[in-house]
Image (cartoon, rainbow, N blue to C red; front, side):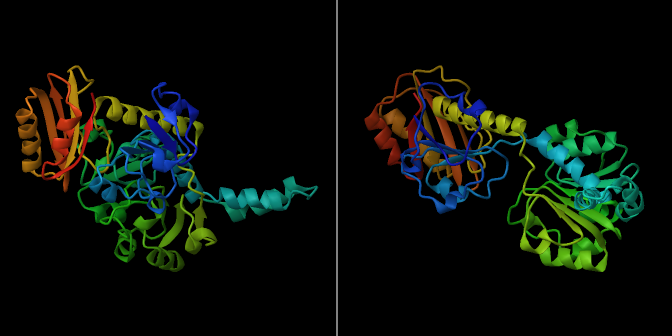
Length: 386
């Protein structure tokens, strides 16, 4: 099995590949690929590519919807870099409340002053700020990162309000009961001194923090964005900063509009830039790819449904990407039966306009049978797992 790394991937993860996997420098030759920030919509993939794993959570750089139509499964690594991002968000809350960067710059600019200690005592009032203790933090999005941020903020003495209309049962149970959950985002905006965003950049969230949101926020609120720049309407953001409605914008995404703005603190996308996060993401990505290649299981895919039959114990196992319609799965089962194959177990699930099925058989499936399955109406791709 050949793999390609479009970006530098931590050796901690790559060492998890066995000798059955070899690296190729050519993406067109690869059967699986690992990526961080490289824009895959700008590169050509080969017909043999089965899966891509993003060593991180966001997948804006991967045309995953198009890949789904080709039977290419795209994975991400949710939660693997959560602690790194959480720590950066806490730092951003402090950067949003105290002018630490301005103060550090003053010291550097006056480094040649022999009396810098005395001069600093006079200058420091220009960099005074406020404390976060007792302030209210609004956390928009209570996934792996949002929950960690909420819990850390509570331990720092903040009151925390959370909003997440898609909060699952397990995530809700893991949420500290001291987090006040609201069902109306406007209630969060109106009550929060600081607001932090933890949402994916999808069509529904693009520009969602705009003029109406800023109008609802408290006067002098601070907005922290370690999610994606596209979630915030930049023109409306700049207007809110100019009017004083928003006191400061602290972001991990540099754009021309905010990079040099005096009320913005902008970092070069450092959220997951820690050794630990890169190691964790790489290890998780490799494990996902190996589980898919060796067992056919899909865990943490962004474009195909999760299907997991565990480790292969049967003589044969086949993975089928299809159009999500019942007829495709039924057609595959009928074709197997017609070829004399005995099905010993199966799982099938759909996601949007695609589906995925895993089928265990009592004996191995011959190549000619696989060719027959590939011709079943609605089938996108068939792969012999064993």
